[in-house]
Length: 366
Image (cartoon, rainbow, N blue to C red):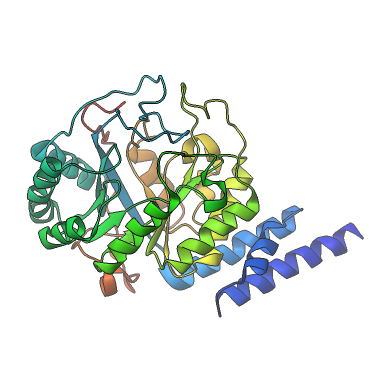
């Protein structure tokens, strides 16, 4: 009887994967994917996600890297964040690092094999003088590295985004963090609607929009599906999947609720709900996945962050490159910046040379 029930669960997952390849899943169908009570149904979920990833993204892996360009002193009270001024943490605090150091970080990101490079600033929004320096740096990043420049700059409006677009920034990042129904448990200083509007503003400017969230912050599976469905409705282009890495001094310092199986299931859900989109695995993968990191692409990921995160170290570029090579995948080459039609998977991807270990250390970042 148990074997028969297991086959029924697995067959239902396979059916839903087939549906996801043909049309958008409904909320009920997406929730049905969550129910994987045995190994066979879980394996079926991963198999379906991998098939969708191969169909839409091929076997190339997009690597992105960031620089923590302004750290600490943030007035928002996000309970996961070590940069919040509301909590006592050991995160370094420093002002905007400026044009030259951003450009240096871009060169380091290029050496790691990254294709996309994001400048991240702490705080509600980037200041006018900081925006001036960043817009001055963008053409240099493009000319000297060929990377696609991105910004994670807090709450910005159409005018600021238009200036960034004019300077050559083709991408914009703004996470929604979690489902709206759970957001009040995460942050009380910024309305959820402001985050959504920032995503919409970037879409209005014709930018390649990267927006996702952090999982493992006490949300339910229904709320995880809720967030992914909203990202689909907003038609974001890339979905960064982050897993909580509890930081000492924050209210979530003791949270340890995700298993590696949960993390893989979240990635697979994202691929089924947004089958054609870029799905990136970013912060917290080392802590939450451990040796199962090599399964992220089978679970549907088409890219990942390489190097260090905002306030924590990554595991090192050499290990990530070796993992990609071992799996028979290829790193998407950084041959030009920009997105749109050029963001489609290459039909004949060039082989990527392995690189020696280069530590990506953003200026004074911990």
